[in-house]
Length: 186
Image (cartoon, rainbow, N blue to C red; front, side):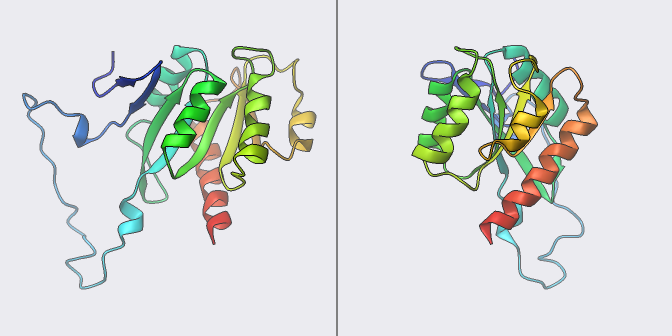
């Protein structure tokens, strides 16, 4: 079990690999950056300190773990990443109703049903009206939805195969979608 992993309700959890997850017994040192904006007289940009909120929606706990392994502790566009977890479409809806500011969803297609991820994407766009959230569809079963079909689906922003994605590719995909998310906020 990863330190900092907390389970809330029915299998929904949240993990953040930062100082808030350090036990009192741990010897942790936190240092301020030497080149701080405060020191050079410029105004402090609080937006750059707010972490990106990433929702991982997948019924496979190993996918959650590998995503944390690949992206945990990383900084993208000057901001840390904070992860929320859901293991079904219903749990994802619960997280979205409780957590504002989700910018990217890493979404599996096949969960409780063969098309649960697609139904969730539709629900997010049509029922919740969340057009700004970037949805990255990750599938281990490309036969159910081809890349061409995914590109034609307006509810999905990016499509990747789990079998082909590397750590670097995942970083690049998330970084690219975060830039798009920033553009949608303006």
